[in-house]
Length: 347
Length: 186
Image (tube, rainbow over all chains, first blue to last red; front, side):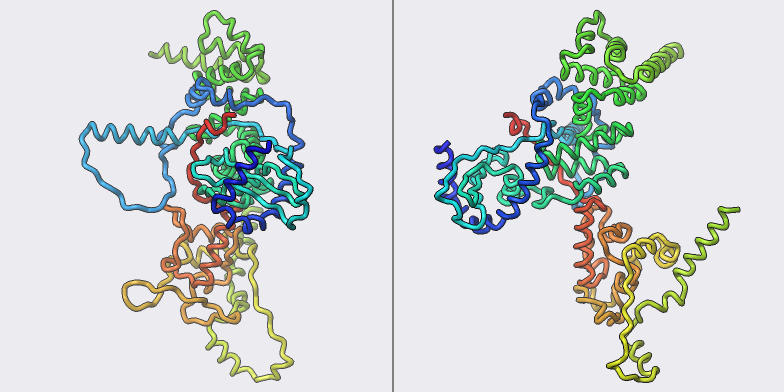
C-alpha cells in the first residue's frame, strides 16, 4: 500500500497543488460532516446486488434499447434555448445538401446516448495508513489531489489526511467536489442544487417535468451516485405508475427507463402501452431485454423453446408465463390482431 | 344560481383590489408630493410623532396580484417592462440608475418598472414575474438596458432567478452531457 501512496503525494508536491493546500483545508470541516450523511444514507442499501452495467453496456442490449427509444426528428431537433447567433447561409448542390442532412441526423442521434445504468457505489473505508505520530498536526483535514495533465475525473487520486493522522482515500462526495474545482464541468454545481430535495422533486414530478429532472440529474451527478440513482428511480416509478412513457420517447432516458423496468420485473404496463400504440416490434424487443437480463426466468426458457418465434407468439408466451395483468394484455393483443385482420380485408 | 353569485363576489373582490382607497395606502409617488403634504399638515413635535410603518407587500399578495384582473388591466399580456420608456440623450441607452427608491420613498421622476409598482415583488417563487425577464429564445436574463430596471432591482432579479433555477421553479438551460462508457467499466 505504501508505494502508490508515496507517488501520489509526490505528484501533489510537484504540481502547483501546494499553493492550493491552504485553500483546500478550509473545505475540510464541511467535508467531514457531509461524509457522515453519506455513510448513513448508504448503509440502508442492499449490498448483495448484481452489477447491471456489464449487461447494460453490452452491444446487443444497447442496440435493442436504441431501437425501442425511437427517433422522432421533431422531438430531437425541436426548439432549444441557446445563445442567439446570426443565421449562416450556404449555397449547396444536392449531394452536399444530402451530406449536411445526414451529418445533422448523426449529430441528433448522438444526443440519444443513454446515461449508464449502475448500482449506487460503495464507500472505501479501509485507511491506507495510520500514523498516530501525525495526530493533531492541524485542526482540519488536508486533501491531496492528483492534478497531473490528462487524468480523467473518475481515475483521479484524491486522498485525505485526517486530523488523527489517518490517511485514506477520499469519499466520493469529496472527490467530486475536488473534480469540480480542478476540472469544472458546465452544468455541475459545487453545492448540490435544491431541486434534488425530496419535496421539490415531488412538486416537479406532479408537474410532469420528467425530462428536465433527468437532464439536470445527468449534469449534476455521476451515474453511480446514490443521489442519481434515487432521483432517476423515483422519476421512473412515477412514469410507470402514471403510464406517461410517451414523454420520454425519443429522448436519451427512454432506454434507461426500459432497462430499469426490466431489471425490476415491472415491464407489464410499458408492454401494454406499446401494444396499445401498435409498437409490436418494440414490445418484442422489451420481452427480449427481459429475457437477457433474467436468463433463468420461466419466460426466457419458454421463449427459447418456441418453434416459430414470431412477434405475437413471443408476446403470448410472456403473457402466459410472467405477466401480472394478464387479462388487459390479452385483450389489447386481441384488439391489435383484429385490427390488423380488418386492415388486410380492406386492402 | 351558485355559480354567477360566486363570480359576482370574485369580481367584487378584484375591484376592491384595484380600488382607489386601497391604493391610497401605497407609498407616495414622489418626494415633492410628500413635501407638499407635509407643509399643508400642521407641524407637530417630531420627536414624539410615531413614524407610520412603510407598507411591505409580501410574496403571496404579489403572486395573487399577478393572477388578478387588476394586473391584466394594468399590463395586459405584455411583460411589465414592455411599455416603459427611458428618457436619454442620443442613440445608445446609458447604464440605468443606481436605485429608484431612497429611504422608502420613490425619489426619481420615472421609477423603473419594478419600483413603480410595489405589488411586483421579486422572489424565487414569483415565477410569473421572473419569467418576463428571461429571453424566450436564449433562456438568458435580459439586460437592464433593455428592461430599464434600476441597478438595485436588476441585481435582486438576477439573484432571485438563480435561486429559482436552483430550486426548480424555473427551467434553466441544461448543457448536454456525453458519457464515455469505458470510464465506467471496472
